[in-house]
Length: 161
Image (tube, rainbow, N blue to C red; front, side, top):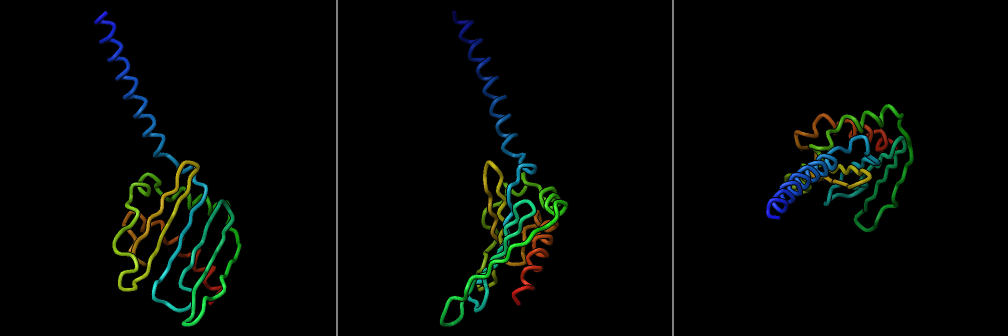
């Protein structure tokens, strides 16, 4: 009876080890499962349209800008657009989601001394992860990726300036 118990414990431990490892691996492979990518900038002590963001979901792009004057809130600006399927696939495939997911949620001191904030949020069917960092001081892991998002944002910003 003792041998059966020991054997059961060993088998259970092995199964538990492999099942945990499998769950961990699955939780790290979401590139093909990305639903949306959001990118934005904001400045705390600013007049005008100081908060701007884009949300890319497949080929659909939604741009939003909001802000204020000394005395009032400015009307929100919303612009819809689209990108090609190739551009969407490039955005999805150019980010290493495992690396992105392992970055801290806040990097540096965003908007300290009114330096501004940039952020990226990637949503999959399983989770959303958002990284916030100092304006134009992105983490090294995002340097090759962020230019695509900045360029896309710039195309929409040109419409409101």
